[in-house]
Image (cartoon, rainbow, N blue to C red; front, side):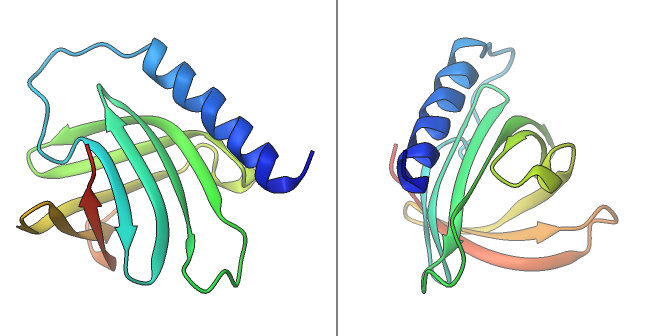
Length: 129
Protein backbone atom coordinates (compact mmCIF):
# COMPACT_ATOMS: atom_id res chain seq x y z
CA UNK A 1 0.00 0.00 0.00
CA UNK A 2 1.43 3.39 -0.96
CA UNK A 3 1.95 6.00 1.73
CA UNK A 4 -0.85 8.20 0.33
CA UNK A 5 -3.28 5.26 0.29
CA UNK A 6 -2.22 4.34 3.82
CA UNK A 7 -2.77 7.95 4.94
CA UNK A 8 -6.20 8.03 3.27
CA UNK A 9 -7.16 4.75 4.97
CA UNK A 10 -6.02 6.05 8.37
CA UNK A 11 -7.87 9.33 7.87
CA UNK A 12 -11.07 7.49 6.87
CA UNK A 13 -10.84 5.10 9.83
CA UNK A 14 -10.18 7.89 12.31
CA UNK A 15 -12.94 10.08 10.87
CA UNK A 16 -15.42 7.20 11.10
CA UNK A 17 -14.33 6.39 14.67
CA UNK A 18 -14.51 10.04 15.72
CA UNK A 19 -17.97 10.56 14.21
CA UNK A 20 -19.34 7.31 15.64
CA UNK A 21 -18.42 8.26 19.20
CA UNK A 22 -19.53 11.89 19.05
CA UNK A 23 -22.19 13.41 21.27
CA UNK A 24 -23.28 17.01 21.71
CA UNK A 25 -24.02 18.74 25.02
CA UNK A 26 -23.94 22.34 23.73
CA UNK A 27 -24.79 24.31 20.60
CA UNK A 28 -22.13 24.06 17.87
CA UNK A 29 -19.49 26.75 17.62
CA UNK A 30 -19.11 28.68 14.36
CA UNK A 31 -15.57 27.29 14.26
CA UNK A 32 -16.84 23.72 14.10
CA UNK A 33 -17.31 22.02 10.75
CA UNK A 34 -15.14 21.16 7.76
CA UNK A 35 -12.36 23.59 6.84
CA UNK A 36 -9.74 23.75 4.11
CA UNK A 37 -6.42 25.40 4.99
CA UNK A 38 -5.23 28.23 2.73
CA UNK A 39 -1.90 30.05 2.67
CA UNK A 40 1.36 28.34 3.60
CA UNK A 41 -0.35 25.12 4.74
CA UNK A 42 -2.64 22.85 2.80
CA UNK A 43 -5.06 20.27 4.13
CA UNK A 44 -8.36 20.02 5.92
CA UNK A 45 -9.76 19.92 9.42
CA UNK A 46 -12.99 18.45 10.71
CA UNK A 47 -14.20 19.62 14.11
CA UNK A 48 -17.49 18.36 15.46
CA UNK A 49 -18.99 17.29 18.78
CA UNK A 50 -15.70 17.50 20.68
CA UNK A 51 -13.79 15.35 18.16
CA UNK A 52 -11.35 16.44 15.46
CA UNK A 53 -9.32 15.23 12.48
CA UNK A 54 -6.55 17.41 11.02
CA UNK A 55 -4.70 16.67 7.77
CA UNK A 56 -2.01 19.23 7.01
CA UNK A 57 1.29 19.91 5.33
CA UNK A 58 3.22 22.62 3.52
CA UNK A 59 1.90 23.85 0.17
CA UNK A 60 5.30 23.23 -1.44
CA UNK A 61 5.19 19.52 -0.46
CA UNK A 62 8.62 19.83 1.19
CA UNK A 63 7.53 17.36 3.89
CA UNK A 64 4.84 14.66 4.00
CA UNK A 65 1.36 15.59 5.14
CA UNK A 66 0.47 14.78 8.76
CA UNK A 67 -2.83 13.53 10.12
CA UNK A 68 -3.83 14.04 13.77
CA UNK A 69 -7.10 13.16 15.50
CA UNK A 70 -8.52 13.27 19.00
CA UNK A 71 -10.74 15.36 21.22
CA UNK A 72 -11.10 19.07 21.84
CA UNK A 73 -12.64 21.44 24.35
CA UNK A 74 -13.79 25.02 23.93
CA UNK A 75 -13.27 27.53 26.74
CA UNK A 76 -14.68 30.94 25.80
CA UNK A 77 -12.96 31.60 22.47
CA UNK A 78 -10.09 29.11 22.72
CA UNK A 79 -10.04 25.55 21.39
CA UNK A 80 -7.68 23.03 22.99
CA UNK A 81 -7.15 19.82 21.04
CA UNK A 82 -5.59 16.71 22.58
CA UNK A 83 -4.05 14.38 20.01
CA UNK A 84 -4.98 10.71 20.45
CA UNK A 85 -4.03 9.38 17.00
CA UNK A 86 -1.35 10.65 14.63
CA UNK A 87 0.78 9.63 11.68
CA UNK A 88 3.65 11.15 13.70
CA UNK A 89 4.12 9.10 16.87
CA UNK A 90 5.60 12.06 18.78
CA UNK A 91 2.36 14.04 18.39
CA UNK A 92 0.26 11.55 20.40
CA UNK A 93 -0.57 12.95 23.84
CA UNK A 94 0.30 16.54 22.90
CA UNK A 95 -2.21 19.36 23.05
CA UNK A 96 -2.51 22.33 20.74
CA UNK A 97 -4.55 25.49 21.28
CA UNK A 98 -5.93 28.07 18.89
CA UNK A 99 -8.38 30.93 18.87
CA UNK A 100 -10.25 32.73 16.12
CA UNK A 101 -8.89 36.21 15.38
CA UNK A 102 -11.37 37.19 12.66
CA UNK A 103 -13.92 35.97 10.15
CA UNK A 104 -14.35 37.31 6.62
CA UNK A 105 -17.31 35.51 5.10
CA UNK A 106 -16.44 31.82 5.50
CA UNK A 107 -12.70 32.47 5.96
CA UNK A 108 -11.34 32.08 9.47
CA UNK A 109 -8.07 33.65 10.57
CA UNK A 110 -6.71 31.98 13.70
CA UNK A 111 -3.68 32.03 15.97
CA UNK A 112 -1.95 28.97 17.38
CA UNK A 113 -1.18 29.17 21.08
CA UNK A 114 1.42 27.57 23.32
CA UNK A 115 0.54 26.27 26.80
CA UNK A 116 1.01 29.77 28.26
CA UNK A 117 -1.48 31.06 25.64
CA UNK A 118 1.19 33.01 23.73
CA UNK A 119 0.88 33.22 19.96
CA UNK A 120 3.22 30.81 18.16
CA UNK A 121 1.74 30.91 14.68
CA UNK A 122 -1.11 32.09 12.45
CA UNK A 123 -3.21 30.50 9.77
CA UNK A 124 -6.30 30.81 7.61
CA UNK A 125 -8.95 28.28 6.68
CA UNK A 126 -12.11 28.38 4.57
CA UNK A 127 -15.23 26.75 5.98
CA UNK A 128 -16.55 24.18 3.48
CA UNK A 129 -19.40 22.68 5.53
